[in-house]
Length: 68
Image (cartoon, rainbow, N blue to C red; front, side):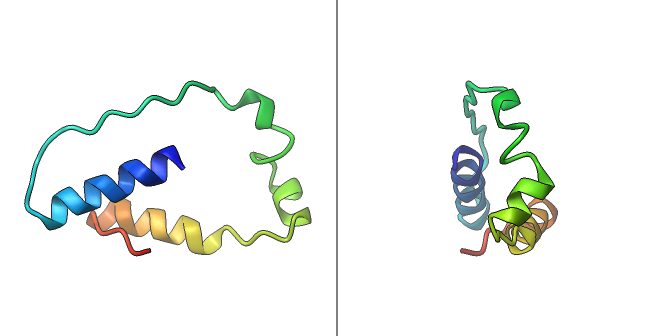
């Protein structure tokens, strides 16, 4: 959610023609999620399809546009 919030803010800035820096702090290296959220097998077992979310992030990185 931290990264998504930053992406949304950046997209809004781009749409408004504003420039500036966005700083975010992520205080957790994620190592404790290696067997869950960072595991493709675990994510699949939850029935989650992350492809649409990855596509949205890829589109944002290419265009600066965030579609909700």
